[in-house]
Image 1 (cartoon, rainbow, N blue to C red):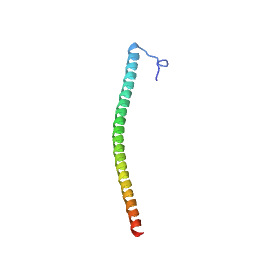
Image 2 (cartoon, one colour):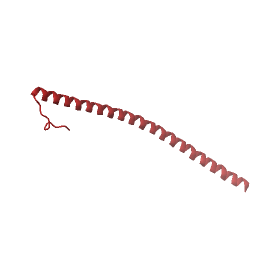
Image 3 (cartoon, rainbow, N blue to C red):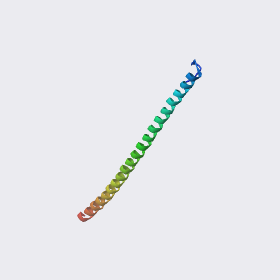
Image 4 (tube, helix red, strand yellow):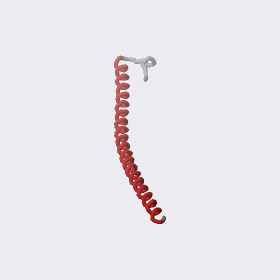
Length: 84
């Protein structure tokens, strides 16, 4: 953070103006950071929802594949018994 030790002001008005400008600069910086953070949170929520959807789809697909695998194993066993 900047300090006033290296600053030499010719009047109280000049020092007041300096500190007001510095305060506005930091206020704007804080507002920009807050906006970036809000955008980051929104993007994170959207990304989380997208990942959750993908996870649900993957889990569903996995269940379907396991079910199909079990069905095919049973069919294979059935065919083995028929040919013996």
